[in-house]
Image 1 (cartoon, rainbow, N blue to C red):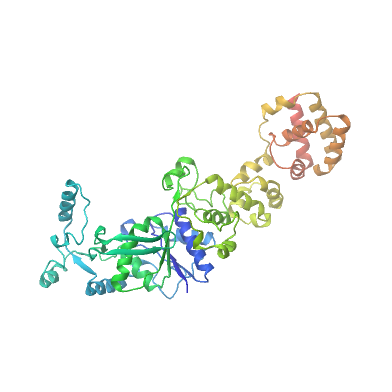
Image 2 (cartoon, rainbow, N blue to C red; image 1 turned 90 degrees about the vertical axis):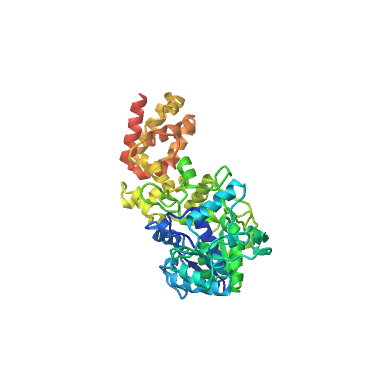
Length: 490
Protein backbone atom coordinates (compact mmCIF):
# COMPACT_ATOMS: atom_id res chain seq x y z
CA UNK A 1 0.00 0.00 0.00
CA UNK A 2 1.28 3.44 -0.94
CA UNK A 3 2.20 5.51 2.13
CA UNK A 4 3.66 9.01 1.85
CA UNK A 5 4.47 11.67 4.42
CA UNK A 6 4.69 15.43 4.47
CA UNK A 7 7.23 16.23 7.15
CA UNK A 8 7.66 19.97 7.80
CA UNK A 9 9.56 21.60 10.64
CA UNK A 10 7.48 23.90 12.89
CA UNK A 11 9.88 26.84 12.57
CA UNK A 12 7.45 29.44 11.22
CA UNK A 13 4.74 29.75 8.57
CA UNK A 14 4.49 27.17 5.80
CA UNK A 15 6.04 28.49 2.57
CA UNK A 16 4.11 27.74 -0.64
CA UNK A 17 7.06 25.55 -1.65
CA UNK A 18 6.29 23.38 1.35
CA UNK A 19 2.59 23.45 0.52
CA UNK A 20 3.36 22.24 -3.01
CA UNK A 21 5.42 19.39 -1.52
CA UNK A 22 2.43 18.48 0.64
CA UNK A 23 0.16 18.63 -2.42
CA UNK A 24 2.33 16.28 -4.50
CA UNK A 25 2.50 13.85 -1.58
CA UNK A 26 -1.26 14.04 -1.14
CA UNK A 27 -1.92 13.52 -4.86
CA UNK A 28 0.46 10.56 -5.10
CA UNK A 29 -1.33 8.94 -2.16
CA UNK A 30 -4.82 9.55 -3.56
CA UNK A 31 -3.87 8.45 -7.09
CA UNK A 32 -2.63 5.15 -5.66
CA UNK A 33 -5.40 4.78 -3.06
CA UNK A 34 -2.79 5.15 -0.33
CA UNK A 35 -2.23 7.04 2.90
CA UNK A 36 -1.17 10.67 3.37
CA UNK A 37 0.65 11.31 6.65
CA UNK A 38 1.56 14.57 8.37
CA UNK A 39 4.68 14.20 10.51
CA UNK A 40 6.09 17.14 12.48
CA UNK A 41 9.89 17.15 12.45
CA UNK A 42 10.60 19.18 15.58
CA UNK A 43 13.90 17.66 16.70
CA UNK A 44 15.56 21.10 16.64
CA UNK A 45 13.81 22.59 19.65
CA UNK A 46 15.89 25.79 19.46
CA UNK A 47 14.16 26.71 16.19
CA UNK A 48 10.66 25.73 17.28
CA UNK A 49 8.13 28.57 16.81
CA UNK A 50 4.87 28.56 18.75
CA UNK A 51 1.81 28.25 16.53
CA UNK A 52 3.65 26.76 13.54
CA UNK A 53 2.18 23.29 13.86
CA UNK A 54 -1.42 24.48 14.04
CA UNK A 55 -0.69 26.81 11.09
CA UNK A 56 0.53 23.86 9.00
CA UNK A 57 -2.54 21.79 9.86
CA UNK A 58 -4.89 24.69 9.03
CA UNK A 59 -3.14 25.36 5.70
CA UNK A 60 -3.52 21.73 4.65
CA UNK A 61 -7.18 21.67 5.67
CA UNK A 62 -7.87 24.97 3.87
CA UNK A 63 -6.62 23.36 0.65
CA UNK A 64 -8.68 20.21 1.23
CA UNK A 65 -5.65 18.00 1.98
CA UNK A 66 -6.82 16.32 5.17
CA UNK A 67 -4.08 14.01 6.53
CA UNK A 68 -5.06 10.39 7.03
CA UNK A 69 -2.61 10.22 9.92
CA UNK A 70 -0.90 12.90 11.97
CA UNK A 71 -0.70 14.70 15.32
CA UNK A 72 -4.26 16.02 15.01
CA UNK A 73 -5.67 13.11 13.05
CA UNK A 74 -4.26 10.14 14.95
CA UNK A 75 -3.17 6.83 13.43
CA UNK A 76 -1.48 3.53 14.23
CA UNK A 77 2.11 4.64 13.60
CA UNK A 78 2.47 7.52 16.07
CA UNK A 79 3.62 9.52 17.81
CA UNK A 80 3.69 11.85 14.81
CA UNK A 81 5.85 14.52 16.45
CA UNK A 82 9.53 13.63 16.45
CA UNK A 83 10.03 15.30 19.83
CA UNK A 84 7.79 12.57 21.28
CA UNK A 85 9.81 9.74 19.71
CA UNK A 86 13.06 10.22 21.63
CA UNK A 87 13.00 6.72 23.19
CA UNK A 88 12.49 5.19 19.73
CA UNK A 89 15.55 6.96 18.34
CA UNK A 90 17.66 5.91 21.35
CA UNK A 91 16.71 2.28 20.75
CA UNK A 92 17.72 2.42 17.09
CA UNK A 93 20.90 4.42 17.63
CA UNK A 94 22.03 1.76 20.12
CA UNK A 95 21.19 -0.92 17.57
CA UNK A 96 23.18 0.83 14.85
CA UNK A 97 26.21 1.19 17.13
CA UNK A 98 26.06 -2.53 17.92
CA UNK A 99 25.92 -3.29 14.19
CA UNK A 100 29.08 -1.22 13.69
CA UNK A 101 27.32 1.31 11.49
CA UNK A 102 27.78 4.22 13.92
CA UNK A 103 30.07 5.28 16.74
CA UNK A 104 30.33 7.66 19.70
CA UNK A 105 32.35 10.86 19.22
CA UNK A 106 33.56 12.88 22.22
CA UNK A 107 35.42 15.74 20.53
CA UNK A 108 35.10 19.15 22.08
CA UNK A 109 33.88 22.15 20.10
CA UNK A 110 37.33 23.72 20.41
CA UNK A 111 39.16 20.70 18.98
CA UNK A 112 36.78 20.54 16.02
CA UNK A 113 37.15 24.26 15.44
CA UNK A 114 40.92 23.93 15.46
CA UNK A 115 40.77 21.08 12.94
CA UNK A 116 38.40 23.06 10.74
CA UNK A 117 40.65 26.12 10.79
CA UNK A 118 43.66 23.99 9.92
CA UNK A 119 41.86 22.55 6.88
CA UNK A 120 40.75 25.99 5.72
CA UNK A 121 44.29 27.35 5.94
CA UNK A 122 45.50 24.55 3.68
CA UNK A 123 42.66 25.26 1.23
CA UNK A 124 40.73 22.09 2.01
CA UNK A 125 37.12 21.50 3.07
CA UNK A 126 36.98 19.95 6.53
CA UNK A 127 35.36 16.51 6.71
CA UNK A 128 35.15 14.25 9.72
CA UNK A 129 35.37 10.83 8.11
CA UNK A 130 37.34 7.74 7.23
CA UNK A 131 40.43 9.76 6.28
CA UNK A 132 40.82 11.43 9.68
CA UNK A 133 38.46 9.90 12.27
CA UNK A 134 41.46 8.10 13.81
CA UNK A 135 42.82 11.52 14.82
CA UNK A 136 39.82 12.37 17.01
CA UNK A 137 38.33 11.29 20.33
CA UNK A 138 35.73 8.62 19.52
CA UNK A 139 34.77 5.05 20.29
CA UNK A 140 36.88 3.86 17.35
CA UNK A 141 40.08 5.29 18.85
CA UNK A 142 39.48 4.92 22.60
CA UNK A 143 39.58 1.75 24.65
CA UNK A 144 36.28 0.20 25.85
CA UNK A 145 37.03 1.42 29.35
CA UNK A 146 37.69 4.96 28.13
CA UNK A 147 34.48 4.89 26.12
CA UNK A 148 32.51 3.71 29.13
CA UNK A 149 33.82 6.66 31.10
CA UNK A 150 33.44 9.17 28.27
CA UNK A 151 29.75 8.46 27.60
CA UNK A 152 28.97 9.78 31.08
CA UNK A 153 29.65 13.22 29.63
CA UNK A 154 28.69 14.94 26.38
CA UNK A 155 28.93 13.05 23.13
CA UNK A 156 27.40 12.73 19.69
CA UNK A 157 26.85 9.65 17.55
CA UNK A 158 28.24 9.64 14.02
CA UNK A 159 27.50 7.48 10.99
CA UNK A 160 30.46 5.28 10.05
CA UNK A 161 30.98 5.69 6.31
CA UNK A 162 33.19 3.07 4.71
CA UNK A 163 35.87 4.45 2.33
CA UNK A 164 36.32 3.55 -1.31
CA UNK A 165 32.70 2.67 -2.04
CA UNK A 166 30.25 3.99 -4.63
CA UNK A 167 26.84 4.87 -3.22
CA UNK A 168 24.10 4.41 -5.82
CA UNK A 169 20.63 5.84 -5.29
CA UNK A 170 17.60 6.17 -7.53
CA UNK A 171 15.41 9.25 -7.85
CA UNK A 172 12.10 9.10 -9.71
CA UNK A 173 12.69 12.55 -11.21
CA UNK A 174 16.46 12.62 -11.77
CA UNK A 175 17.31 8.99 -12.36
CA UNK A 176 20.36 7.24 -10.93
CA UNK A 177 22.77 9.20 -8.72
CA UNK A 178 26.30 7.91 -7.97
CA UNK A 179 28.47 9.33 -5.17
CA UNK A 180 31.96 8.33 -4.02
CA UNK A 181 31.77 7.54 -0.29
CA UNK A 182 35.14 9.28 0.21
CA UNK A 183 33.32 12.56 -0.44
CA UNK A 184 30.89 11.98 2.44
CA UNK A 185 31.26 12.98 6.09
CA UNK A 186 30.58 10.77 9.04
CA UNK A 187 27.46 12.84 9.70
CA UNK A 188 26.13 13.31 13.21
CA UNK A 189 23.08 11.13 13.79
CA UNK A 190 22.44 11.91 17.46
CA UNK A 191 23.21 15.29 19.04
CA UNK A 192 24.62 15.87 22.50
CA UNK A 193 21.14 16.69 23.85
CA UNK A 194 20.00 13.18 22.96
CA UNK A 195 17.86 14.35 20.04
CA UNK A 196 18.45 12.86 16.60
CA UNK A 197 19.41 14.92 13.58
CA UNK A 198 17.00 15.16 10.67
CA UNK A 199 19.04 12.60 8.74
CA UNK A 200 18.68 9.84 11.31
CA UNK A 201 15.16 10.58 12.52
CA UNK A 202 13.62 10.76 9.06
CA UNK A 203 15.14 7.41 8.03
CA UNK A 204 13.98 5.66 11.22
CA UNK A 205 10.53 7.22 11.03
CA UNK A 206 10.09 6.47 7.33
CA UNK A 207 11.01 2.84 7.99
CA UNK A 208 8.76 2.43 11.03
CA UNK A 209 5.85 4.27 9.40
CA UNK A 210 6.22 2.05 6.30
CA UNK A 211 6.71 4.99 3.93
CA UNK A 212 6.86 3.73 0.35
CA UNK A 213 7.73 6.99 -1.45
CA UNK A 214 9.62 9.99 -0.06
CA UNK A 215 8.58 13.15 -1.93
CA UNK A 216 10.47 16.27 -0.83
CA UNK A 217 12.27 19.36 -2.12
CA UNK A 218 15.45 19.11 -4.15
CA UNK A 219 17.42 20.80 -1.37
CA UNK A 220 17.50 17.34 0.25
CA UNK A 221 18.97 15.65 -2.83
CA UNK A 222 22.61 16.02 -1.62
CA UNK A 223 21.62 14.18 1.58
CA UNK A 224 20.15 11.23 -0.30
CA UNK A 225 23.39 9.16 -0.48
CA UNK A 226 23.83 9.48 3.27
CA UNK A 227 20.24 8.43 3.91
CA UNK A 228 20.83 5.43 1.65
CA UNK A 229 23.88 4.52 3.75
CA UNK A 230 21.75 4.61 6.92
CA UNK A 231 19.22 2.27 5.32
CA UNK A 232 22.07 0.00 4.26
CA UNK A 233 23.62 0.04 7.74
CA UNK A 234 20.32 -1.17 9.22
CA UNK A 235 19.85 -3.60 6.31
CA UNK A 236 16.49 -1.98 5.59
CA UNK A 237 14.92 -1.56 2.18
CA UNK A 238 14.84 2.13 1.24
CA UNK A 239 11.63 3.70 -0.10
CA UNK A 240 11.42 5.31 -3.53
CA UNK A 241 12.62 8.92 -3.66
CA UNK A 242 11.37 11.90 -5.61
CA UNK A 243 12.99 15.32 -5.22
CA UNK A 244 10.85 18.19 -6.47
CA UNK A 245 12.26 21.18 -8.37
CA UNK A 246 12.59 24.52 -6.62
CA UNK A 247 9.99 27.27 -6.90
CA UNK A 248 12.01 30.14 -8.32
CA UNK A 249 11.77 33.92 -7.99
CA UNK A 250 9.62 35.67 -10.64
CA UNK A 251 12.78 36.51 -12.61
CA UNK A 252 13.86 32.86 -12.47
CA UNK A 253 17.06 33.60 -10.54
CA UNK A 254 17.16 31.77 -7.24
CA UNK A 255 14.68 30.28 -4.79
CA UNK A 256 11.49 32.21 -4.01
CA UNK A 257 11.70 33.81 -0.56
CA UNK A 258 9.58 35.81 1.84
CA UNK A 259 11.67 38.86 0.95
CA UNK A 260 10.66 38.56 -2.72
CA UNK A 261 7.02 38.75 -1.69
CA UNK A 262 7.59 41.74 0.57
CA UNK A 263 9.53 43.52 -2.17
CA UNK A 264 7.05 42.89 -5.00
CA UNK A 265 3.80 42.86 -3.02
CA UNK A 266 2.63 39.27 -3.27
CA UNK A 267 2.17 36.56 -0.61
CA UNK A 268 4.44 33.51 -0.28
CA UNK A 269 2.45 31.82 2.49
CA UNK A 270 -0.99 30.19 2.13
CA UNK A 271 -2.43 31.85 5.26
CA UNK A 272 -1.70 34.99 7.23
CA UNK A 273 1.16 34.67 9.71
CA UNK A 274 0.76 36.91 12.74
CA UNK A 275 -0.25 40.50 11.99
CA UNK A 276 2.35 41.60 9.48
CA UNK A 277 2.38 38.81 6.89
CA UNK A 278 -0.77 38.21 4.81
CA UNK A 279 -1.36 34.92 3.02
CA UNK A 280 -3.09 33.93 -0.21
CA UNK A 281 -6.33 33.34 1.69
CA UNK A 282 -6.34 36.85 3.18
CA UNK A 283 -5.39 38.34 -0.21
CA UNK A 284 -8.61 36.89 -1.63
CA UNK A 285 -7.58 33.60 -3.22
CA UNK A 286 -9.84 30.57 -3.19
CA UNK A 287 -8.25 27.31 -1.99
CA UNK A 288 -9.24 25.68 -5.30
CA UNK A 289 -7.13 28.27 -7.14
CA UNK A 290 -4.21 27.82 -4.75
CA UNK A 291 -4.21 24.06 -5.39
CA UNK A 292 -4.65 24.48 -9.15
CA UNK A 293 -1.78 26.96 -9.46
CA UNK A 294 0.63 25.03 -7.21
CA UNK A 295 0.04 21.85 -9.20
CA UNK A 296 1.26 23.66 -12.33
CA UNK A 297 4.53 24.67 -10.65
CA UNK A 298 6.76 21.83 -11.77
CA UNK A 299 4.18 19.37 -13.11
CA UNK A 300 1.91 18.88 -16.09
CA UNK A 301 -0.21 16.01 -17.38
CA UNK A 302 1.21 16.16 -20.90
CA UNK A 303 -1.71 18.18 -22.26
CA UNK A 304 -2.48 21.87 -22.72
CA UNK A 305 -5.04 21.73 -19.92
CA UNK A 306 -4.34 24.12 -17.04
CA UNK A 307 -7.62 23.88 -15.15
CA UNK A 308 -7.72 21.21 -12.47
CA UNK A 309 -9.86 20.74 -9.41
CA UNK A 310 -8.37 18.80 -6.51
CA UNK A 311 -10.47 15.82 -7.61
CA UNK A 312 -9.17 16.16 -11.17
CA UNK A 313 -5.61 16.21 -9.88
CA UNK A 314 -6.14 13.12 -7.75
CA UNK A 315 -6.92 11.24 -10.96
CA UNK A 316 -4.44 12.96 -13.31
CA UNK A 317 -1.32 13.19 -11.14
CA UNK A 318 1.59 10.99 -12.09
CA UNK A 319 5.22 11.29 -11.02
CA UNK A 320 6.29 11.08 -14.66
CA UNK A 321 4.86 14.58 -15.13
CA UNK A 322 7.19 16.18 -12.57
CA UNK A 323 9.86 18.28 -14.27
CA UNK A 324 13.54 18.48 -13.32
CA UNK A 325 14.07 22.22 -13.77
CA UNK A 326 12.92 24.91 -11.35
CA UNK A 327 9.44 26.40 -11.73
CA UNK A 328 9.24 30.21 -11.94
CA UNK A 329 6.64 31.78 -9.67
CA UNK A 330 4.26 34.06 -11.57
CA UNK A 331 1.85 35.99 -9.35
CA UNK A 332 -0.14 37.31 -12.30
CA UNK A 333 -0.65 33.75 -13.52
CA UNK A 334 -1.84 32.80 -10.02
CA UNK A 335 -4.30 35.73 -10.11
CA UNK A 336 -5.50 34.65 -13.55
CA UNK A 337 -6.18 31.12 -12.30
CA UNK A 338 -8.05 32.56 -9.33
CA UNK A 339 -10.03 34.84 -11.67
CA UNK A 340 -11.25 31.91 -13.76
CA UNK A 341 -12.21 29.88 -10.71
CA UNK A 342 -14.04 32.84 -9.17
CA UNK A 343 -16.07 33.21 -12.36
CA UNK A 344 -16.97 29.52 -12.35
CA UNK A 345 -17.89 29.41 -8.64
CA UNK A 346 -21.61 29.93 -7.98
CA UNK A 347 -22.30 33.22 -6.20
CA UNK A 348 -24.37 31.29 -3.66
CA UNK A 349 -21.15 29.58 -2.52
CA UNK A 350 -19.03 32.73 -2.59
CA UNK A 351 -21.29 34.63 -0.20
CA UNK A 352 -20.48 31.98 2.44
CA UNK A 353 -16.80 32.99 2.32
CA UNK A 354 -15.78 34.91 5.46
CA UNK A 355 -13.74 37.46 3.50
CA UNK A 356 -16.71 38.15 1.22
CA UNK A 357 -18.94 38.69 4.24
CA UNK A 358 -16.50 41.23 5.66
CA UNK A 359 -16.12 43.08 2.37
CA UNK A 360 -19.88 43.34 1.78
CA UNK A 361 -20.82 44.26 5.34
CA UNK A 362 -21.86 47.80 4.33
CA UNK A 363 -24.52 46.43 1.97
CA UNK A 364 -27.88 44.89 2.94
CA UNK A 365 -27.59 41.08 3.04
CA UNK A 366 -30.44 40.71 0.62
CA UNK A 367 -28.28 42.46 -2.02
CA UNK A 368 -25.17 40.29 -1.60
CA UNK A 369 -26.11 37.69 -4.18
CA UNK A 370 -26.96 40.31 -6.82
CA UNK A 371 -23.81 42.27 -6.00
CA UNK A 372 -21.58 39.24 -6.47
CA UNK A 373 -23.30 38.27 -9.69
CA UNK A 374 -22.84 41.84 -10.96
CA UNK A 375 -19.09 42.14 -10.39
CA UNK A 376 -17.83 38.53 -10.24
CA UNK A 377 -16.41 38.52 -13.75
CA UNK A 378 -14.28 41.54 -12.86
CA UNK A 379 -12.67 39.96 -9.80
CA UNK A 380 -9.15 38.55 -9.84
CA UNK A 381 -9.12 38.11 -6.09
CA UNK A 382 -11.90 38.53 -3.54
CA UNK A 383 -10.13 41.67 -2.30
CA UNK A 384 -11.13 43.30 -5.60
CA UNK A 385 -14.71 43.29 -4.27
CA UNK A 386 -14.06 46.46 -2.31
CA UNK A 387 -12.84 48.39 -5.33
CA UNK A 388 -15.51 46.98 -7.64
CA UNK A 389 -18.48 47.72 -5.35
CA UNK A 390 -17.51 50.96 -3.64
CA UNK A 391 -19.21 53.05 -6.36
CA UNK A 392 -22.55 51.54 -5.29
CA UNK A 393 -22.16 53.29 -1.94
CA UNK A 394 -20.86 56.50 -3.43
CA UNK A 395 -19.78 57.28 -7.01
CA UNK A 396 -16.12 57.79 -7.79
CA UNK A 397 -15.02 61.38 -8.43
CA UNK A 398 -15.80 62.14 -12.06
CA UNK A 399 -12.98 61.22 -14.42
CA UNK A 400 -12.10 64.63 -15.87
CA UNK A 401 -10.34 63.22 -18.95
CA UNK A 402 -13.47 61.30 -19.86
CA UNK A 403 -15.57 64.40 -19.28
CA UNK A 404 -13.53 66.36 -21.82
CA UNK A 405 -14.20 63.70 -24.45
CA UNK A 406 -17.98 63.69 -24.15
CA UNK A 407 -18.83 67.32 -23.30
CA UNK A 408 -21.34 68.81 -25.69
CA UNK A 409 -24.99 69.33 -26.50
CA UNK A 410 -25.58 65.68 -27.43
CA UNK A 411 -24.42 64.58 -23.98
CA UNK A 412 -26.81 67.00 -22.27
CA UNK A 413 -29.67 65.86 -24.51
CA UNK A 414 -28.89 62.20 -23.74
CA UNK A 415 -28.82 62.83 -19.98
CA UNK A 416 -32.17 64.62 -20.08
CA UNK A 417 -33.68 61.67 -21.96
CA UNK A 418 -32.25 59.21 -19.41
CA UNK A 419 -33.79 61.28 -16.59
CA UNK A 420 -37.15 61.29 -18.33
CA UNK A 421 -37.07 57.53 -18.85
CA UNK A 422 -36.01 56.83 -15.26
CA UNK A 423 -38.81 59.03 -13.93
CA UNK A 424 -41.52 57.11 -15.78
CA UNK A 425 -40.13 53.58 -15.16
CA UNK A 426 -39.83 51.68 -11.91
CA UNK A 427 -36.69 49.77 -12.93
CA UNK A 428 -33.52 50.94 -14.64
CA UNK A 429 -33.42 47.64 -16.52
CA UNK A 430 -36.61 48.46 -18.39
CA UNK A 431 -35.29 51.64 -20.04
CA UNK A 432 -32.61 49.94 -22.15
CA UNK A 433 -34.64 49.14 -25.25
CA UNK A 434 -36.40 52.52 -25.38
CA UNK A 435 -33.15 54.41 -24.77
CA UNK A 436 -31.38 52.58 -27.61
CA UNK A 437 -34.30 53.21 -30.01
CA UNK A 438 -34.36 56.92 -29.10
CA UNK A 439 -30.60 57.28 -29.67
CA UNK A 440 -30.89 55.66 -33.09
CA UNK A 441 -33.84 57.87 -34.05
CA UNK A 442 -32.10 61.08 -32.90
CA UNK A 443 -28.79 60.00 -34.48
CA UNK A 444 -26.96 60.42 -31.20
CA UNK A 445 -24.00 57.99 -31.02
CA UNK A 446 -24.71 55.16 -28.61
CA UNK A 447 -21.19 55.60 -27.23
CA UNK A 448 -22.01 59.11 -26.02
CA UNK A 449 -25.29 57.92 -24.47
CA UNK A 450 -23.72 55.02 -22.61
CA UNK A 451 -20.58 56.89 -21.52
CA UNK A 452 -22.69 59.76 -20.17
CA UNK A 453 -24.90 57.31 -18.29
CA UNK A 454 -21.91 55.37 -16.90
CA UNK A 455 -20.10 58.50 -15.73
CA UNK A 456 -23.31 59.55 -13.99
CA UNK A 457 -23.70 56.31 -12.05
CA UNK A 458 -20.09 55.20 -11.56
CA UNK A 459 -17.85 58.26 -12.07
CA UNK A 460 -15.62 56.24 -14.44
CA UNK A 461 -15.98 54.62 -17.85
CA UNK A 462 -15.29 51.14 -16.51
CA UNK A 463 -17.53 48.81 -14.55
CA UNK A 464 -20.17 46.09 -14.85
CA UNK A 465 -23.43 46.19 -16.80
CA UNK A 466 -25.06 49.63 -16.54
CA UNK A 467 -28.65 48.49 -16.37
CA UNK A 468 -27.82 45.91 -13.68
CA UNK A 469 -26.21 48.78 -11.75
CA UNK A 470 -29.44 50.76 -12.15
CA UNK A 471 -31.45 47.90 -10.75
CA UNK A 472 -29.18 47.61 -7.68
CA UNK A 473 -29.07 51.35 -7.03
CA UNK A 474 -32.82 51.69 -7.44
CA UNK A 475 -34.82 54.35 -9.24
CA UNK A 476 -34.31 57.20 -6.78
CA UNK A 477 -30.53 56.83 -6.37
CA UNK A 478 -30.04 56.39 -10.12
CA UNK A 479 -32.10 59.53 -10.83
CA UNK A 480 -30.20 61.58 -8.29
CA UNK A 481 -26.83 60.54 -9.73
CA UNK A 482 -27.82 61.40 -13.31
CA UNK A 483 -29.20 64.77 -12.21
CA UNK A 484 -26.07 65.50 -10.17
CA UNK A 485 -23.92 64.69 -13.17
CA UNK A 486 -25.97 66.96 -15.42
CA UNK A 487 -25.60 69.77 -12.90
CA UNK A 488 -21.86 69.12 -12.81
CA UNK A 489 -21.65 69.49 -16.58
CA UNK A 490 -23.69 72.68 -16.52
